[in-house]
Image: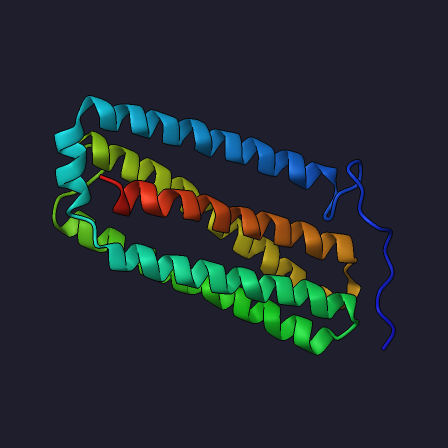
Amino acid sequence: MKPRASAAPSLSDPPGGLFIWLLVALELITFGVALAAFAASAKAAPEVFHDSRQLLDPRFGFANTIFLLTSGWFMAEAVRHFRLSDLPRSRRSLVLALGGGALFLVSKGLEYSDKISHGHTLGSNPFFTWYWLLTVFHLMHVGVGMVILANLLRRLDRTRPEDLEAGGVFWHMCDLVWLLLFPALYLLS
């Protein structure tokens, strides 16, 4: 099969298009400001943050990291196979990327259930307020990303490489944000 042709990316026309990169930049700034506020709150109440962090199970955070990074790899594979005009492998990779996102959602649901059952809710203390705000906001992004990937999967035979790349850029942004949230919430004291 002949690879799908597209123009070489440039600064004015990056993979996925300029709009998705502007959106990603805005999202990263938003999460960056929130993490800076989280760090300032942690500095103001170090004991509360330390003690509350001990109530999180880093195994959930680590598993979620594996789920998202593996999913991101499958997303990259979906784009690669698509560019090689191998739609069956691209489709399979997209399904596996969605599966990684689904595992992330299930794992977060289990973790949230555990936190709620132990009374660690949004208003419990400053740490858990930030925990809930940051992780639910991220979870919403993962959900939106899954809708994007599912839509791309549904119309894969009619999509353009740029559309698949844009979905991949958004999905990788979810990976990147989680790679910032995981150590900040679960590991740093």
